[in-house]
Length: 308
Image 1: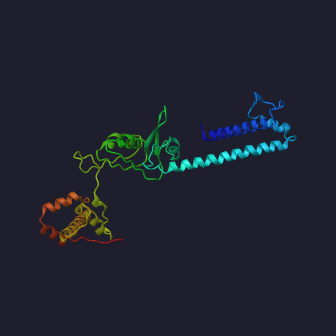
Image 2: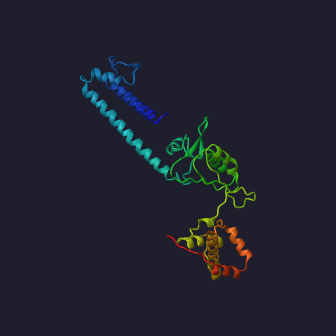
Image 3: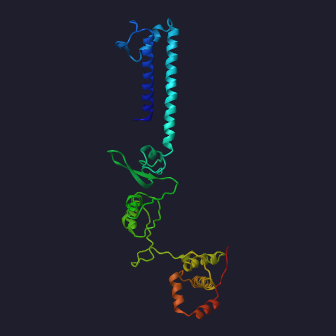
């Protein structure tokens, strides 16, 4: 039942009770005269009979009516004060222990509607709500806020949330798909129906179907950023734990590897070869001795023209 109808019904019941008490009190005051209309049983009258009596007899018996009205109103006021005092007292005692075991609970329909996730046709799937004896309603979020699904392994996060989202989200997306399940299930739909370009990046893929990424191609040669760009890549290779390069050998290794990468990139640029990758750096390290590599690096004219 809607809240507005409930409020109107409560007001109607209160008015009926108030009117019934007033009617019976007036009848008692007038000693149940036969001229009083609306009698149902002996000394029992219709709840709203007092309205008709007021219209017919108020001017003639105004003091009696005012006295009855004031007494009934005083009684109702006293009852309301006592009732509210008892109600607030018990409510206060109950609230002391409401959160002793936490406040988590299943959301009600009103709480779900307040989140604006019910019956949406777009956005991320974040759950579902099943109304009693009715169909399941999906909950979807399409706001600016971040969304995180936290649940144990094999509890249905992928099947219930991720895959439905990937099969309905038409915009671009980056998916960390360690097992490859999301790609296998959703890539076809996203390519043919969402008109997405699909790139599967898996450096350990032995089939050669993985998309390629060469981090060395992102180094901005002939700029003031080339050394910093190169060192960022080298640090990620040498400092696996992210604890920083501590001793001389680690720092020296960073300097040497950064120099070798820049040397190899300049050779490719000057001689119009394809941009080298990390595998090319690996081949250089294993094809020559350290002295030969250092000699090549020191004797080669790199033709470095720094641009800002």
